[in-house]
Image (cartoon, rainbow, N blue to C red):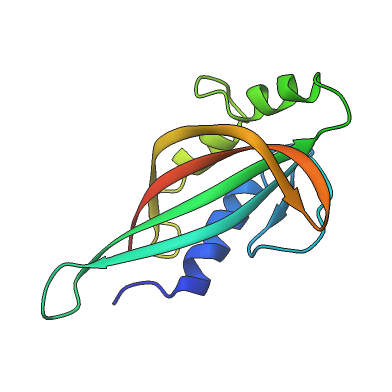
Amino acid sequence: MSATNSEIRTVIAAALDAVSGLHVYAYPVDAIQTPAAVVTDLEHTFTTFERGRESGAEVTVVVSKSHVDQMVVLDRLLDTDRAGSVVDALEGITDANGVSVSVITVGGFNEIIVGDVAYYAATVVMKVWT
């Protein structure tokens, strides 16, 4: 049986909790404390009549926009070759409560607005197996 949406979010959030200093949100929120990671999207493509599916998830990583130096913090959090990064934590999800993850892309570095406050952010797109 496939993991539920809630179970997928919980596993992803639990893995991100291991990133030092990162505030983690399993669901989109109206206000955040930075640096943060928010599980912002789940997507399922049904592949068979028996309801087989391919799943994906997105995590948005957010830092303050108080100074352009915060982009350095964002870069460090998303470094694909750095132990303790968001990418490292997500790639470490292998059969956690029946959920495994593979990072597909990291990008979309831009400004986002959360609760009328501007932040720098980027998105991590993952393939999810359940």
